[in-house]
Amino acid sequence: MNTQAKPRVLIPGAEIEATVKRLAAEITRDYRDKNPVLLGILKGSFVFLADLVRKLDFPLQVEFIRLSSYGSGQQSSGSVKVVQGLRLNIKDRHVLVVEDIVDTGVTLAFLMEYLKKKKPASVRLCALSDKPSRRRVPVQIDYQGLTVPDRFLVGYGLDCDEKYRNLPDICVLEE
Image (cartoon, rainbow, N blue to C red; front, side, top):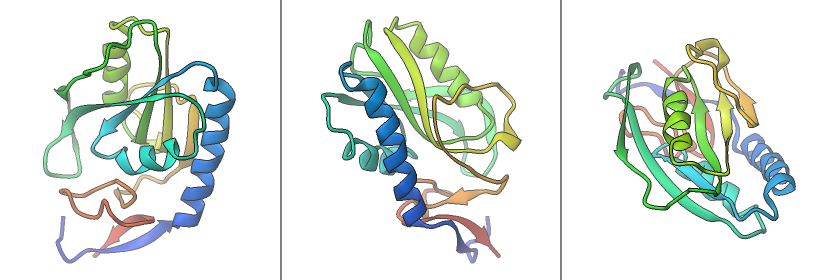
């Protein structure tokens, strides 16, 4: 990636905020009495997860898992590994996976199988953004935010070589 690339706003922060509010209302409807575990996938989901949990007014727990399928570039290696596993026992718990973006689906398909082996009461997926044009493996998104184009995105937790995560908008990089 060219280090001179400039971010251009694709989805402004106000639209992201409205989407998070809508998703929180849907999640509240379904999880209010279930004391779910919201499982953030590090590092990308932390901004979205932080905003989402502040809009949820019911008992819940937050847990993180760190997976890797990217090297230092923009292409997935296609091989997924658990870098930091669960520290919380999710057996018989309702688990809501919180993800920043669903791209090829390879990482999420791996994660859903990994979680199902731990025998939770349920596992569902909440994704802020979905890039269906890149899908290689089917993934069911139970709470879907925004559909995004097949562009490399940064901002609002999304990065390029660990840069741009702090941008308040979702952006594309331009030369």
